[in-house]
Length: 538
Ligand code: NAP
Image: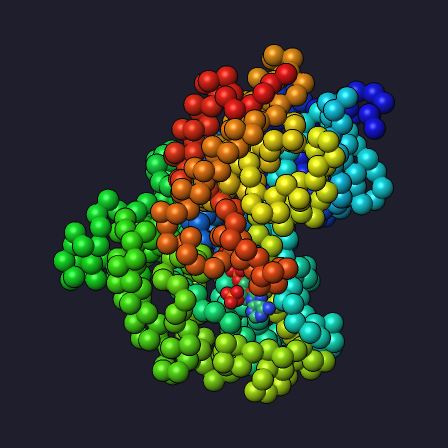
């Protein structure tokens, strides 16, 4: 069915998080007619939804803020080196006000269906509230981790206390005093919740299936003098981020583990363990995440740290992963996590020994006993990367559905476009190199590039943009090669599509780009220089 008249909008952006905010700003600068559709009641995306206790990012705050506006950089003061969720949400709200973006955003509106119309060369976007909009170009900024998954366990509805998935944490304060709390899940989220709640609740029961390798965050507050000094160094900080594979301030060393004496390695690892942030994961010897022997050695070293910090030897051994080496899954950064288990009110339940049988009205029944709790926290993760796309029905040329197209692997060109879905740009989509980074750093690059492409389209009176099958095939091969050099390709985690709560338990899929931000940026540049090779512009 074709649209009756010209589309309502030049561009519709779905999502008002870190990516949507910046995309809107860039497109408004080009004087386009743009609107943002957001399911939440305010901007912020990830930082709007995740309000669970202990939620904060693992990027140095001053490397996380947008870099494009010197005025914003100079005006905004970060209070902590690793800002907690309320501070980051305040920051994003401040940016939205500062750039007068709010009036271009529509909140509380859920997109349900987007259908391409070949005749009018536009997209029709349907909302849950019954409205329908049309647009020449559609951009998704719907996040990697915004489709939370509840565990597939019998009885979840039977629990009579309060229970939340961490993503849907209530906006009002939760009173934990005197409460018995159960936490299911020990990924980056669960680890933050556990560290935060251990000394605030009467009793904490941690239901752990597979442990993760965690490392200390070493967060601290930023004094006014320190903040003033940071403000003079922003250019240097962002240049440093541009040089690293992950867009963080941390980059792997050029030396390999075996290039250094045993004492030298241990000294360096000790230094990393005592330093703030992701250095221990992303700033280690170059082979730790790629070579099994190097990884085994570091893994054995850090296992002893857990044994040092956890008093009870049984608990310590249960907290040590045995199915993957350090860094092969996302490393949760922790604050007093291991020490939590030394407290009398905290208990670890090892679900591999005593699996959950069901959730009851009073708590969690394992094969060993029923754990009665007042509050149940589901820190059970996400249908990562493609889950947020699957919740919307995208219908491309010839009626094909994106959900079906991506059922086996999310095939894209540069993570930005999909053959058969013209004029749709998946900002922060699967296999986009701008995604597997310190998010705002990669996002600024990806959005800038897409905004330039839109400018090119306008300048050349182009009405249709679609990548070729061949370009997708070549990009997919490159994405797979980048996975294969890393040990993470052998571990089961959301990085490569696993989630036991999805049908079939999830399956090995190539969701992310691991070739590094600089290489991705170079590639984008070459594509643009060569008249957007791989795209058909008509
Ligand atoms: P996650 O890493 O996928 O962890 C989910 C946890 O729930 C795992 O421990 C999993 O166990 C467990 N689980 C899932 N289903 C279960 C079931 N049916 N029964 C028992 N246990 C179950 O999810 P996440 O912790 O929410 O983290 C996701 C990502 O969000 C992170 O990797 C990170 O990228 C991001 N994040 C970032 C920050 C930050 O910036 N600091 C903080 C939080 C999250 P198995 O491991 O056995 O499957």
